[in-house]
Image 1 (cartoon, rainbow, N blue to C red):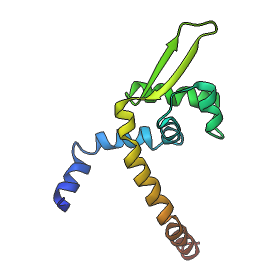
Image 2 (tube, rainbow, N blue to C red; image 1 turned 180 degrees about the vertical axis):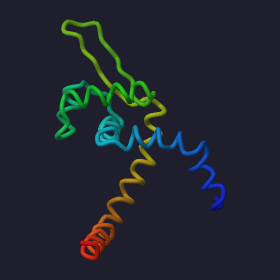
Image 3 (cartoon, one colour; image 1 turned 180 degrees about the horizontal axis):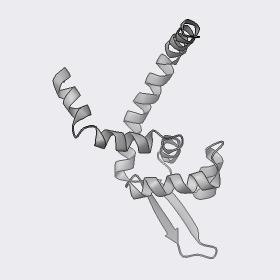
Length: 125
């Protein structure tokens, strides 16, 4: 892909589309929820147990946003007590590959980034 085409894809509509998506999936919890649901359907409590540190409020908020965006499906079973399960939608599953690529990039480059931050901080303090 040419540099020009890549720049056009990123800048596109003034960056609104990409900013909106990155705001959603780039938050603290969304990618963890998506990764946890990869290949599995699970109840809220199980999902919360598998994501260390997430509060009930934040998990509720995150799955609602992901459901609104069409990345997560919520199924309510008419039982007593009601049972609710979450799973990735077809579109949600397409997020796994780019998310893993981003995670790999982060792991591979984190040591160099930390060295750069240390050097910058030492030079500018």
